Image (cartoon, rainbow over all chains, first blue to last red):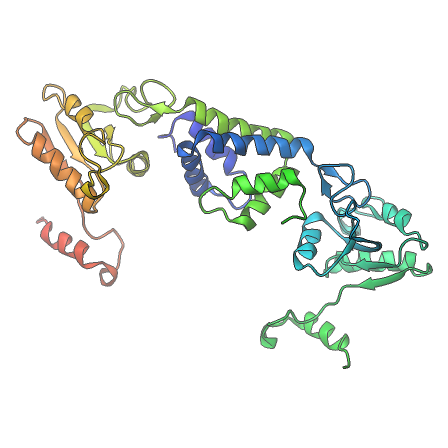
Length: 199
Length: 199
């Protein structure tokens, strides 16, 4: 790509470090930015810097936030007696998108994985136990992933909290809505049969 | 997407203005930038600003450049008696990628298009004629696009320059290398037959 002047090559290089952006796409984006109105490019650059400077973790639930308390934890309409435990902010975003939950969250920041050397002290499990005051919390929903690490994390939390008065639940596993049964993997099918319910 | 704090939403919004970047991709990129090392994000932002501030047009050929004269025009190894006329910098980049040309360029900045109100004075045709000194220039290769506007532009330039001693040529049209003949459009096939050559 040596036919472009250095500033373009530098931006192409920086852009191509982003996930899913190859050299070709980076080239197209850089040329777009070059021809875009000045304020658009300046806004983009400023937004990148602002993001890095202002985002921290909510002191209550550890969600991404630009304030001490995140939008959900400071929303009076959200049910504070319900905590949904997730591994990371994108999982939380997925649940929020569904509009199926009106409680609060607890973001662990990962899952237990002895093989990778991640134990209970490496994720925010202690902080969850601190929040698990039976006077205030009615239910804790374990929404860690449905892979080995997520299941292990859910089991660990259940084990530690099952003696309290708090109801502990796990999000359901089964056939995704609208799916064709023939494309469902064996494990999911087993889970769907095992967890079948009556009417 | 209201579950993200404002600085993330703002960056998602800015990123999704880029071509081919939808809300979903913008979300993934923003979260990547959030978790990327600080210097990477700062470099990206700085590169965007530097690009906008430093890129201008080469005073000779009007290619993108960060200096008065672009890299090709100031390269002593490039043949200054050969000018390849293209519509825009991406066309020039495509030719450079092929390594098939060792002369210089002239970037018109568009093509003649009476229907859009683009006449000879709206693109850099006059500047090309100024460069077309028969003492210095041996050949001008017309590499405008092969669509109606590009062909019209090539014809116009040919008409104006054919009385000079400069050799005027047009890049060849025909079957792309490695293509299956059954997928070639009619117009290309006609051109390929018309321009067939002997051995």
